[in-house]
Length: 559
Image (cartoon, rainbow, N blue to C red; front, side, top):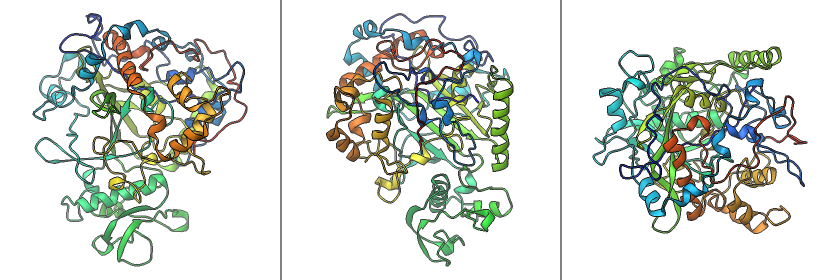
């Protein structure tokens, strides 16, 4: 089995019509973004998988556990063994993520702080009048090198989110119309996705129209909120608090108390073999009765969509690091096919057999830049990234290949994703956890807890020895660790009350991380790595030997 860790965000930078630094490389823009070719045959293997885990005078670090763990059904991938050795197919044993070995310190020194701040504060998604230039280009003036299937039109997702959120987290476009997107607030996934390692990000979800409509087929905000709470309960496998609703209006016993009355929670109770079922409400309830809206624990509804923007780091008027307006990437996912528990189990078994029978064969990347690449589990992933002029363009086939590794066969994901399981609980969070970071920042959110009760981020620090897989974050090391590598109790106490203590960088580090993207921008060299690297990664292998062990002696669990 070949499975991998999450990949950091990428970026490219220009300023006021000219590049911040070197001149634009005229050959940097690919002639055909849809070309089905991988210059890196192991493009699905992100650089974090090449982490050198062994320490010279201490026990091995183990960042691998956050991805490689025993899955929860219907994810039947159980891969904690990958915490113990680098199980790479032969083509992947050479690390081709060359950008992580480059020293960018001289490059950073050539760019002023004011220049980079002005750049990241400039919105490259929305125009001042609310227009979305990328959407207009995709529909009205499609460049030939974006047309992956050469049919003269864009057949993929056209960005339609307005990033205008109400008190329930629902989005509206520039005309005030509901787009169906809803922002969810969550605690960042440990490691690369901490903002202190380079980027801020967000996640939006959209269910198909039947989950938004009443049984009469009309849009109903209460129906939509309840159905999203049902999805949350199914993914988290636990009860979810909701605003009080009249169950008689839905003809569904949401709280499972045996009567149709007022409900203040969706009770998770799904065990078909014991004749315990759950039901959606509204039009989706009727479709479910016709077997047109399947429901199961750990699975999103068919045609669920996710939108994920990855952004730079800004510094607000109070001197605090915050989400920037400028996007590095806009990532999109859609569930194209319903996969049953049985089919998931069969797929995992097939992957195990293939890994045994053909240990040096990598799985092909199936898909294209328009409809996206497949994770073989019903989902397609596509996205947009900055071009050499700072405008968003479709990601190439090779750039998208990284998606299928992280969202595919690894134990930690739930139906191909990570965010919903990390969503803030509805019972004690602002807007019940349905909001965007521009409505309320991360500050003040308590540290998430593991199933064993330990602080999740404190556990990561103990397992890894830093806040990133490469153990390269000097700022976190100095703030959280003593000289003997033990953790400082006072800092852990602060972390328990406010995750910003750990996950947000200082303004100085934020500026440097923003600048570190510049070389990648001018080079358009995403295929060689997207991490913000100031100095070369020391704890990173250039080559991996067959059967090489990590030095980790005991596996850990993500859940």
